[in-house]
Length: 560
Image 1 (tube, rainbow, N blue to C red):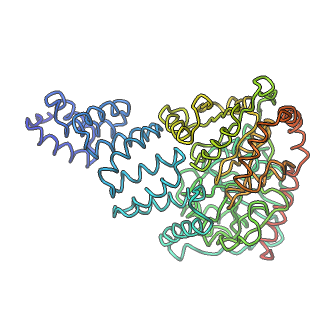
Image 2: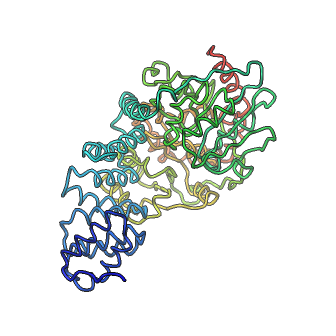
Image 3: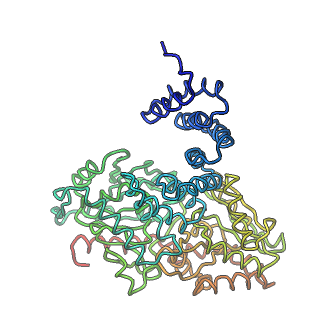
């Protein structure tokens, strides 16, 4: 039989605090539910009841309960923190940031509130502020938290306007050094190729083989491999490669499902398969596998596809890019050797159903609609400032933004508030949230000109815009992440859409919106763009594959 609840509210508060700390949220919730009815004005019990609901996963109820607790005590750091964390779990990033800021104001050096606030700010596009709060969290002295915070900084820093190549290199090397220290030196071997004269065994490592929209360049490469000379292995942390996602199944290919398998075991799997060249397709998008590379499971380790900065990992031998994204002279900002493909490193094919190209919307609406379907975390203050200047200089134009994060009303409110601070009237902006991928692509039916983000460009977003007939306006940025669209546009024969700098980007957008000849030119381009892409290096999957195969052979032989 359950012992009766203590009659003293302070005793209940102390007991349930201990229960929650020990993980007994169910027992705490039972006690607190009764206590709330007996002591409805006790702020401590109200806060602990909110925490118990939160830990039990009853998030909707937790939001209401935290609001009650905060009406009783608006100075409670714990309740503001808890409320922010619930909003964060529900992907309500604007609401999360507001609540977590209240917690941090009360305890500026508190580690967990700063870390959660950083997460919310990053998802909203406040990247520089997010890094500042991750740094504060790292200094809080909480075991393990500094490591997680540094990991997050290393992941997101290429998208920080305040960072440069040197800062990116430093942050990633710092994180990599921490991770490398966890791996016994005996596990960091350098395998040597032993199967001389046989097919070269190449292995692709990815958590995203099942994501058809992401993998267009990957399948363009893998489908074209010469199986008479190469034995292809895929190590998958996600969905299996399939025809639905663009993979042309080959009977000689080897697919290894490694989801949930520890790095130590995967190391043995890859080494046991005799892989000569291991190509990591994840980069920091699946950070948990990067320490695997530090174990050197193959003689040669290459980073390609989802790379847009150094990994900071000395065990990675090569990064594959091109001269548009890594110009000569930037090698000192990479711990890896750089191999440049002759054209874009992201040549792609669209191997699944997509909408037909729609008529140009400005022919109907009479004014240019600029748009962006990039992730919300790419919409930095610098991006919004540039777009605001474009709208100011093109008073008839509209702006359309669509991404998953904008499902949430508080995130939409945050974005509109940021634009308003730049002088943009909300009436000129259309915001939309997530859609199934086919319908998501239909959003390009409503866009005349896509605006690239910076310093974190589109990659998939740029290829999809072009394929739907929408040219992308971009410029030559100051780092790889800020030049990805440049690589694609140059290889597509769209040099005129790549400007020298951010100022030129703004002025070109204004000029296009003001020119009465723009709609006719855009309509012509829209109608012929797919055919132009198919004939251009940007869709030359065979050429990219042959260049990569030649590189793999030379890298395996150690003669590059």
